[in-house]
Length: 226
Ligand SMILES: N[C@@H](CCC(=O)N[C@@H](CS)C(=O)NCC(=O)O)C(=O)O
Image (cartoon, rainbow, N blue to C red; front, top):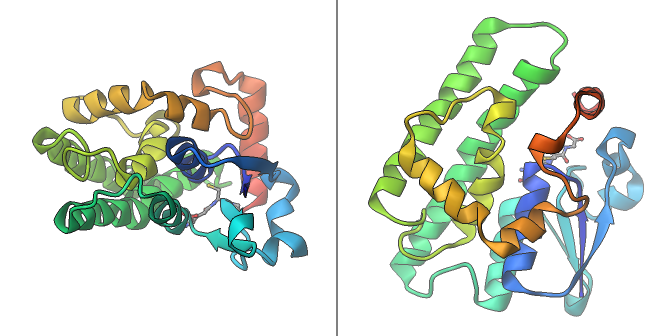
């Protein structure tokens, strides 16, 4: 059994989608980011960085794994799923996973901070992160014009890591207009039953269902973490 410590955010959804994809039994321990649960000593004992997601594998001596990319690799290696067996295809999956971890996630994260949460409006900073996110989307689009999935023919940890971020493009104020391959891939990934189940963890929610009151409370909570 695995315990997943998570919240309804893109990094949290990477871990829940991966757990659904590999089919391991898990229980969910919701973390309320607005209440700063992630900074409490019991959580810091699992992840000194004080951020979700974290998994604890009770079948491996309560081994704790933090950093969503490391969680995806751990689950893939434990189950033999989501990573191609062929070494070159595997290397491609890891490259695109790193591209998400080092590029798409941090740039969209900063676009969100300055576009949505930062107390002052700094147009040049907002533009910088939105333009960089769009540039990364164009790289993804180019890659997806060559291959069905980021690693090639096989759906992998790279797709699991990237989809929960790219799907939130409107929240970051970044357009996907004209990126037909990226849009084709988003439609295909979204249709996967494991992805739909993973997005419902820890609470069932779709961005289009969020009311303006919920949106305001989400922004309020995010500001507490700045
Ligand atoms: N690089 C980390 C980033 C994790 C991260 O930033 N998590 C956010 C939610 S998406 C968080 O826990 N924020 C709470 C905080 O900053 O206090 C990963 O990929 O796991």
